[in-house]
Each structure stands twice: as structure tokens, then as C-alpha cells.
Image 1 (spheres, rainbow, N blue to C red):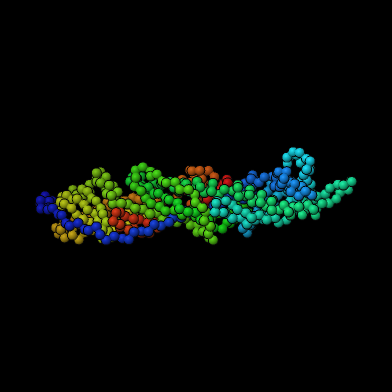
Image 2 (cartoon, rainbow, N blue to C red):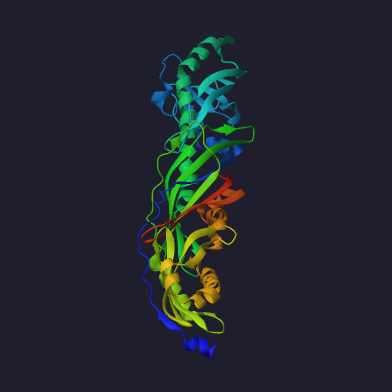
Length: 448
């Protein structure tokens, strides 16, 4: 060993040029998608909460719109709803009071209804661009509970036909009252806004290196509303861009407001997260410098030591410039191709070998005896964890949603997880990586 080391020489091959790069990876949108479920019982409770019991006739002017038959129409029981074939049905008992022009007091002062009936309405149900549930309620039918009669000189005289004409005239007012209650009470933006805001929080990918993922949501789309006799389902798909940042402290995102809701004929409910990662050579070399402060790469009990390394891009490869000492002193250049490993969630440099100029400058005995072990040692070292957290990004997102304001009113479930590397690009200033994560997320609303 002493004899061999006494014959070692200094090598200083010409460095490979930093030219020849992969085309950049175009920005790719990601999608967090899933059905938003909420029970019909919650919809029914909200309508009853928001629908004024006095449907017609709260003011004297409104009550006396017809001088022959001034009416006040009051809901006397809860509204019941059903949903079938993309149509919502409303039914409720109402009472009709005759309003005397000489009577004082408000609606509560009326004791005896002129008549009572059970009414049925129907309406298509849709989601409006301003995040409301919208209806176009239409009167369908009614059943008399108490027919309208008056007593004159001890005789009962039926006013059914007159009451029917008056109710027919007042139908638009009743329909508008129901539509207004649905629109004002069912604020989907209040449900989705906490989800939208939670998506903008930085996600830690690697604690060791301070690697953060920054999602930037850009839009929300919805498809046709579906439902059954238990619940309504609104398909939602949130589109967002992603980028990575190396920073010891959590980066501060720029808050983005909830946008106008876009409507589509259909919506794919598969969450398709395309994680765009970028590691600059400056950041990688900082990480390498910290690693070499902790350890040196040695072969043959110190016969050959790599004391430091920096990397840059060129010739569609990653080029490693190393300082070596021992059997050879000086600078050696290696090249390899970056690849994302889904099993370990790491960015590796594979196929590491000597650059052609370096291989020519090395003594034959060094290249023959130590070449493969040296390349293998460097390949094992050039591994950059992007974090096991990448595999858990959908879980991390749903966990953040559960902890935040959205989690107090909703349940989140994730299933059918799949991680697929898409592409790695060697660029002049760093390494781009695009990773696809496919999964499905269900959101169930407990309280509107």
C-alpha cells in the first residue's frame, strides 16, 4: 500500500461543459376532487330556519293587495322535502287568514284561519356560480284541510272558488319566498372556503433539508347535482399548481380568495396531484457541503477519500465535481442521470460513471481497481430525500382539513392511492421532478 501510494499522482482533467439540457417540464395543474355529501335533513332544517312563517301579508299593504279578499298566508307547520330525479319537492301546511282593514295588531293577533290546506311544490336544484343552492320553485297541487266558508245570517256560504283564484294570483309570491330561503340559507362557500384556505398551507416534505411543498389553488369546478332520499351530492374539483421551496422556516403563502364556481357537464372525481419539485444546484450543493462536514467518503481504509463534491448540469446528465485524496489527488468528474425512486421517495443519481476526460486522465491501475467501487460509493451518496411525506400528501391534506375549521363540520376520507413518477429534467439551474399522485377523497358534511 505504501509503495502504491508513493506512486500516486495529481490529476486535473478538463471539466465537462455545462451545456446540453433537457427541455423544461411545463407547469401541470393538480386536482383535489371528490363528492361533497350533505344530508337532506340538514337541507330541510335550513329551509325551515330561513323561511319566514308569514309567506304573504307581513305588511298591511301586502295583505290588502286585493280589496275584495285581503289575505295573510302563514306556514302552520314545517316544510318537508324529498329529492328524486334531480328535482326537489317541498310540502307544507298553510293557513289563510282574512285581514280586516279595521283590525289592529300583527300576524300573531290573527286567531281563526279563513281556510287551511296542504301545498306541494317542485323545483330543479342546482349550484349557482356564487356558491349558493338555487331553486325555481313551482306550485304543483294542494289538498284542502279546511275549506273556506263564511256565515251570513246563519248560513255557511262556500268561498272555495274565490279563494282558489286568490291563491293562484299569490302563487308567485309564495314560490319566491321559498326560493329566497334556499338561496340565503344554503351557503356552499362557507363549507368550501375553509378547504380552499387549508390547501394554501405549506406542507413539509423533508424536515432534514427544509423542503416545503406550496400548493396554489386556482379554480373550482362542479358538475350536475345528484342525490337520493337521504342525501345530496355535489361533485367538486379544485385545481391548483404546486412548487417546492427549500427553507428552514415555513414559507409564507399569499392568501388567494375563493373564486367564482365554474360549472361543467361532468367532473372527474379522481384527485390527480401533480407535484412539481425543483431542487436548485445551489441548494443541493449546500446540502452536500453540510453532509461532508459530518462525514468523508472513504475506500480501502482511507486509501482513497472523497473530501467534497459539488454538482451541476450538462450533457443531459448530472455532473459531480469531486475532490479526492490518497491514491489520487485532485479533481475527478463523474456523470449520472437523476431518477425519482417511488419506493423510497428519493431523488437519486443513477448510472454514475467517470466522465470521459477524467477516465483518460486516471492511471490504468486506479481506474481498473478502484473505478467501480468509487462510482458505486458516490452513487449511494448522491441520494436526496424528497420526503416520505410525498407519499402521504393526500393524507396530509385531509389531516389539515380535519384539524382546521372545515373539520368541525365535515368528515374526510381518502382511498385508492397511487404514486407514479412522470418525468425528471436536468436544467441549467437545477433538477425538475414531476410526480403524479392519484387518489379519491370523500367529503361528508355533518352540519350546513
